[in-house]
Amino acid sequence: MSDLLADPRYHEGIALFNQRQFYACHDIFEALWHEAIEPDRTFLQGILQIAVGLHHLSNLNRRGATILLGEGGARLQDYQPDYAAVDVSDLMAHSEPILQSLQALPDGDSGEAIAIGLGLRPGNAPNLSCPRLRLQTSGV
Image 1 (spheres, rainbow, N blue to C red):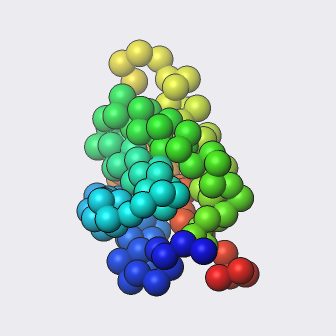
Image 2 (cartoon, one colour):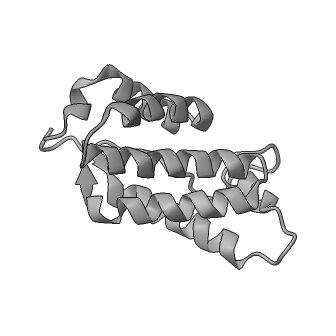
């Protein structure tokens, strides 16, 4: 079992991610990442990269969002279905379509419609599902 579960910063980082405070979440998880050993270290790096990717998307940095969502997802593949009480499969199921949508955009498109659809930017009501860190209740 991961030592992350005993660290209150881990739970704070999860809460910030779920509140869409991706930059603040990044700060918490980065501090944990610096202290972590494997396999927690790669897991945290994947979460960090997805959080920063979503932060980039909220700022219409399509290139940064695409790179980090892709790298974060790749790092988390082997942590499915769950790790450290996080439903990694659910996170991947919500992150991968965003990455695919960004990759399908024509050159010059900032991804603003995707960011608005996720509720990451002002605009119409969100119509896409923004990733969350859902906690598993069994086996914890």
